[in-house]
Image 1 (tube, rainbow, N blue to C red):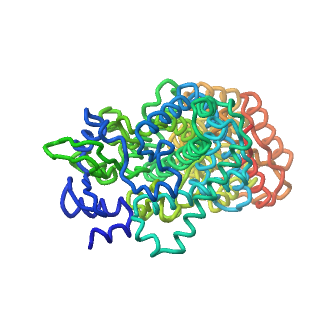
Image 2: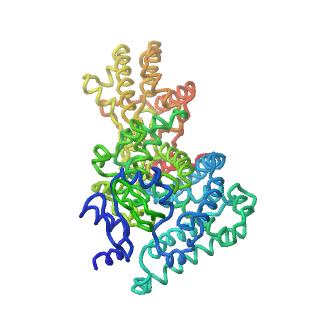
Image 3: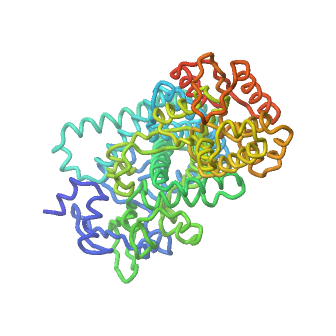
Amino acid sequence: MFIQLQFFYTVPEFTEFWCRLYGDIVGVWMNGEYTIITCDAEFAQRILSDNNSKNFIIRMGNDHGLKEIGMYKNGIIWNNDVSKWTHQKHIFQAGLASNARQRAFNVAVEKTRQEINRIKTSALKNNNTPTVDLLNVFRHITLAIILEVSLGIQLDLEKSQNLIDCVVEYFKAWEFFLLKPRFIWPLFPLKLFHHRKSVLKLQKEIQNIISIIDPQATTFLSQLYSNNLTNEEIQQSILEMVLAGTDTSSVSLYYTILLLTENKKIVNQLIDSLDDSLDDSLLEAVLRESMRLMPVGPVIIRKSLNDCEISGIHIKASTNIVISLARMNRNQKWFDDPLKFDPQRFIKNKNLITLSAPMGVGPKSCVGQHFAMVEMKAILPELLKEFIFTRMDETRPIIDTRTRWDVAQQPVVKEILNVLPRKKVVFVGAHSVGKTTLARFIKNKMNGILVSEIARTLIKELNLNADILRNDPDKSLEFQASIIKAQCAKEEEIEHEFAILDRSALDALVYAQTFCGKRWNELLDMEETNKCLERYRQKNKYMIFLIEPQKECLRADGVRMMPTDYEDWISFSESFKNIMNEYNIEFNAINVLDINQRYSIIRNALFAHNI
């Protein structure tokens, strides 16, 4: 009786139950069929990729359910007619070959940059820390890639969202029909009605797509239309291409970003490694480690064609096999410190790629796994170079995320993430123009890192004051050199952060020019000075804002090197312009006093669209 009740749960749930209760290899009867449930990696490898692997190229599932979702002896995902599956698999392989993968990489970069601009547009509507539904962003990108590369079409945002919604609902129907026995369907009449409606809705969307495609537009389409497939088989193949191409990669990328929010050091290492276009080993390792910990397919389901023996266990024909990747990949027996996010394990031991099997191995493995890896390698760097993602609630570890099995392992509650530009905002200009006040205002609004009052701190530490710095060129030069060193060190600390700085090395150069005579040039010989100037020229990382003087001036506090009058004040500002122009540093001038207007100017610049 208890075994029958397991059908009210998902496959990963009852698999977890049996393995936890009875060990790594368990035999049970489910709905009258003998089933082996395992989380033993060695046993799983013998099923998937050893000499017996061709004995396991069909999948467990009921024929009535397969008919409901259009997969009965059709397509490649759950087609248990071996000859038809083999024929259609070759069509998919041709459509996802190396030329398609190269095209996918280029399209992935293009579509990701479009989504980046959409994120920026949305961010400008939020006056505080912007947020993003990253899973939906990934779905839009992966859907756009598969539509353009495999089907030769593009959809507008509204139609894409509608198709994404159809895919998500179809996955839920798939899980319901495929493995739950037919006799329990009537117990859920509303679900039954909804799931049938969801299947028909996606099929209708695919028919609409077929009506506008050019059969010769892509290799995949030309293969479909030239291999004697029926209209039904063509429709199902296109449907499965859209299904597999949309939700698997997008969910994997979503979990990757979530895991990276907990591992800032790895993010920084990854961003540094992206400068080397010839070595993407860390990028691939990050993706594989993410898929190990949070596999989009937490179980692999098979059925034996003939009798065989594996690891001393006699397996009869038509025995169901359920491999729990989720449990296997978190087992100390197979992975050291298995709950730790450690991409280096895949760099040190390439054999772990096969062991973790996120997209399967052997003849029944995911036909699009190389295509998926290519697109993920294109998408992830673009987003990480542009944005910093943080969670709203960081108290719960990602590995404890509650998920549900809609064939792809979806989050029960989709996290909306905070998103910040991976840039430094630097304010320069004369004293008393409001740089520090503005920096603090932005920090409170957008939750960045504030780097402030470096000069004021050093003045106190060195027991200096404004009069000494104005009238003693030697001490003033020494002081400005100290500021540059401190500034350079601080900028190195925040290299990959969103930070707001109320001064820069430029300030030290301007004040040295003004108060130290010709000796100010000595600062240009400093390694730290040149490092800072080089950073400020990187406009994709640093945004320089010159705060122009206004008539209203703060009173002297004994620390600031106050201008003597308004003309002196303007002269300081011009000196900043001159030195930035001389060293080819782009800057934005702010000529308003109102702090909200200043904030608006800065946000518009931070979230300006990439060209």
